[in-house]
Length: 137
Image 1 (tube, rainbow, N blue to C red):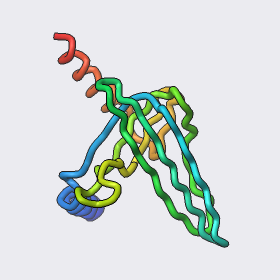
Image 2 (tube, helix red, strand yellow; image 1 turned 90 degrees about the vertical axis):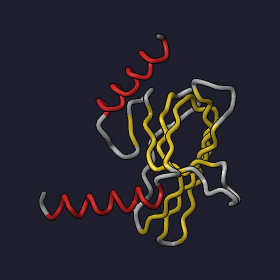
Image 3 (cartoon, rainbow, N blue to C red; image 1 turned 120 degrees about the horizontal axis):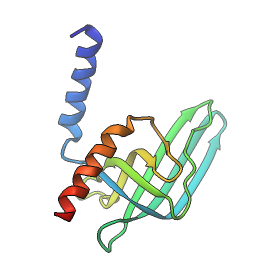
Image 4 (spheres, helix red, strand yellow; image 1 turned 180 degrees about the vertical axis):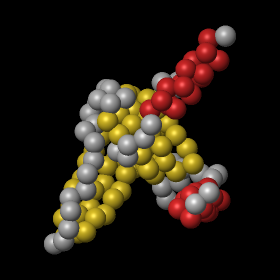
């Protein structure tokens, strides 16, 4: 294991230790999308609020993506109502104001086949196939 691998492993372990109990994912159909872009001289701010209806269950999931960037405009993938998406993020802290809102880390748009942060889709397909096999038995 090289220096770079050790460094990555250290950061992964510390991140999982800090946020491990809050890591969550959700998938479903987009019900509502609200994107706000604000510019303060050189600072670009993007806030995206999503409401997602899961494939299983009657409830809805609220999710929020916030990003600040200096000088450059913040990139975001196109989302619209009816798109099938998968959200990876963190649950809110219990007792806080936004405890029921999911903080988005990554979004996979399965309809348009675009990702906020590119990842390997083969792992997702394998896990979804295993879940489907278990469901129908």
